[in-house]
Image 1 (cartoon, rainbow, N blue to C red):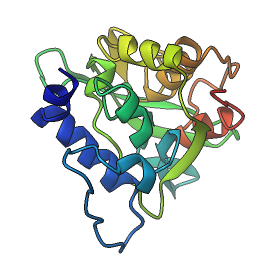
Image 2: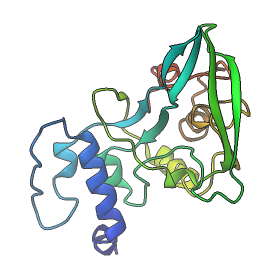
Image 3: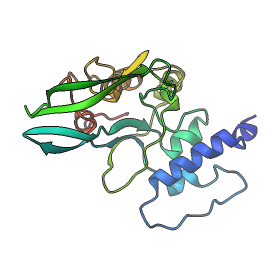
Image 4: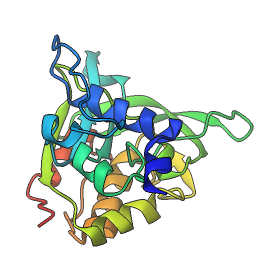
Length: 218
């Protein structure tokens, strides 16, 4: 049964995604050893479960920070986690569905945590299941914080969390407390039993990453 799961296209895609995300820029693709798609993967890519964040990017216009890229934050399991539990999604996060039937856009103005005024186009929509979040690729701007290897209990909670949205709806800026930052803090509590405490309503993904720096799975 495990061999059939390991040979499934969905798992092989997840494994390739994990391997690509963990491979340093410019590195050659290592070859799998053994006779299965998972063979040798954990030994080559030992990175533990991680918070992965793409920072929010802004530019100053007339004394106001204009958000040019909202960024994103999510959890990604390690190759070892995928070996231990092949059913895990390659990322766990909060994002909107692609459908525009209930999509709403509107201007949001407020202040960042440092007091800088900002503006961004807010987006509201229904949310995807947490396990359908697209894995962020690791690059020069990506923030990666390792937390350690998941315990069997944490892995089971991760698997449960991936089957439904963190919140029913998604909103970009944090105005509704339903963006990727708020969801990352909620998943930290649900999956890992760690409370990072409150953040500013318009906290950025990089601030969410800093808030969970002390999270250790063991």
